[in-house]
Length: 199
Length: 199
DNA sequence: CGGTTGTCATTTGTCAACAATGTTTGACTC
DNA sequence: GAGTCAAACATTGTTGACAAATGACAACCG
Image 1 (cartoon, rainbow over the protein chains, first blue to last red):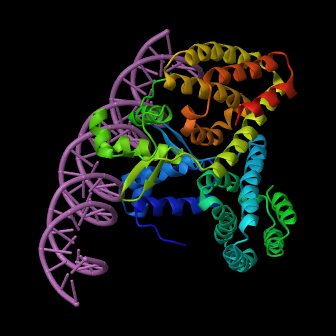
Image 2: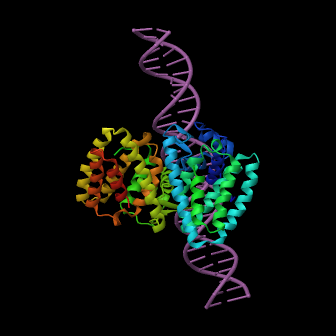
Image 3: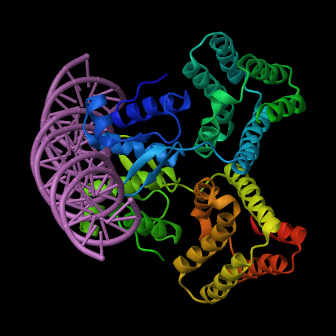
């Protein structure tokens, strides 16, 4: 985890985690002034952070009224999101099989062992963090990470209902299966496992 | 064109148009202070607007340094973007064929006639505007427009190289072909025309 | 001469006060 | 008692001043 230099990023990261871990439920309003006193800073950086999160799809904003935590996507929208994520991550994995850079495998292995522990524990925020980190690693490797900014808002919208749709340990085994196929150089198997994992 | 109440939106729209129409080339730095005096307002709303456009992918930001107009996506990234746009817009059109609401056809027809004129003229900004409006109409109809915020940043990134990759009049005929198939209730033909149009 | 350090101008980051807008409350009318 | 209006409040929008970070360039040292 890298710590951001500017307040804006710090606030954004903090709020993002609180939303994704379910501490802030959909519909909860976020007031600039309250957050400012909570973080002990002025409203400026708070505004920037809220704008960030709004564009990422985690908050929705109404002019002159404020922002609140976004609702889970509808079934229709979620279905589209699933296909988009598959498209992006599959493209990245396919690209990796062109190079088979072992550096990625190392990082995925490291992530996996942490993820396994987290799934056993009770810190949902940690689980979300590592799950996202895993997929981010996949996306980052392709084309100098050019897909990340495309992928992130899509991923985040999907994770708005994270807590409700997953058996954590099963999720770990799916990750492990993907990495195993990559280790073995079995491209089709990796892509298939990835596709089945993203639902 | 709807005029936004707050300065932030006005600035964002204005800059967005200048970028998409090619008046601001990739790499061009945008300084908060300069823009503030140019628009005759303070730096606050400018900041917000730049943050907006950064999240939309039109600008890239470096902390403590500033923003500049983003480069065209790489070939690899562009290819992914094409698939994402196809997925989103095809989903929307498929959903429309479930209802066949004639209101959309009316709006598309109106857009088409304006678009035809624009493609004949020389105002590239106008052409871009109407082209985006056409596809936005498609996306907006499905699921109460829930796909728009997903679709917009993807669309915008693709339009960063708008001027270079299109014969305008041919683009018009492709739009017309899609609408024709929708009028006739020929779903497969509409989807196929859409897929061929997005390249 | 190559590299390093210090200074300076430029630009973004942060802040607190003020203005404008939206929402709620409560009196007033019918 | 239901509806309407206005005033009070809460919240976001905007502003200008100040602080901190960055990059360029010149002076300095090896």
